[in-house]
Length: 225
Image (cartoon, rainbow, N blue to C red; front, side, top):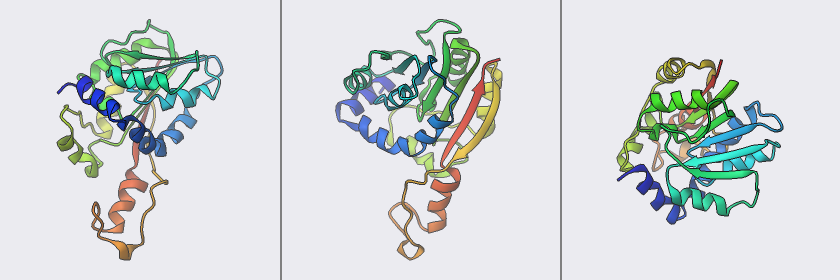
């Protein structure tokens, strides 16, 4: 099954809103750190329900675009807002439908690893960014987060599992400076007391703390020279 087919099914069954609820735990902190200014043009790669561009519009950006490879996802996202400065497009990560040097900031949450060619995607992000523009790339599925490795078994499309170093190297190879890289903790997930373990997902409280508080979401920030 293709990425388009997989996520069209997710959108049709209402799972886009479920993703929004889960991703918002850490996405809201990443979005708050983005240096957007009034009038900027921003792009969200793998927009899903479009929650990120709606949030960025509240900071008075000029135009906000959400790109998704699944038409049903983009269709749902459009239905969730009547803001005429928000647009949703169907497109491929490897060939972004934007002019060179036309975007101030790019955001992506839990979507980059679905790219068929991650290095090509980074090159496209670099192409569309204006000088000084940023790419905030956030993922939970990455090499150091061993708790996420089983996700591939539950989805029919291929996922790219990069390490922290792979992300840094990939950004640099695409021509971006790596401004920062850190882990954004998920503090919204409630962690039970130690005597309530094991749970369905964790044997010990220490494992759950590691998963959500220490590992959380890996954020890599690139800057276009």
